[in-house]
Amino acid sequence: MNIKFNSKGILKLFGFCFILPFTIFEINTINKSSNAEKNLIAASEKDLFLYRQMGASYLCIASKAEVDFGKGLGIASATFANVIIGKHGGVIKELGNEKLDEKKLYNAGTFQIVGSALNICPESIPDKIKKDYEKRLKQLINESKK
Image (cartoon, rainbow, N blue to C red; front, side, top):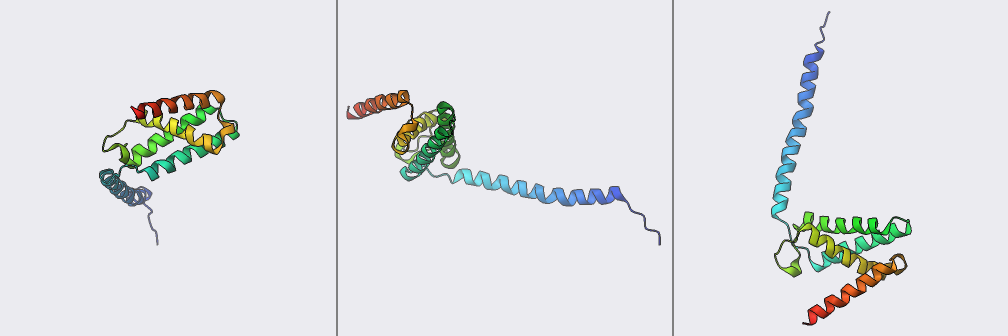
């Protein structure tokens, strides 16, 4: 019995058998992600509280690990903005259906994360940042009274 082994043909068959399922899976994933984008729900106060606390927790841990404060705050703020954009389409329930851009969410996240971090780990926040936060908070309070 002499059996000829056609390696090229078998490799093509196996290649096709492996590529086809991944292609189908990828097409299915694309369809699911486009459907998910249609079902975005605006971020609630509860969602914002969670994201803010996660950012503050990260900032406190990063500060204690001697990571540069500015870099740690930047990463926490960018994550805050990216989660709101990715999960909620940049929409916050309290602000209506207005879609906020990444820069506005980043700035709002920075302010809120510093405020929460002042409650969690005030010793990790540089004095200049504390003073800037308090000054901006007073401005916002005065603006809301008008």
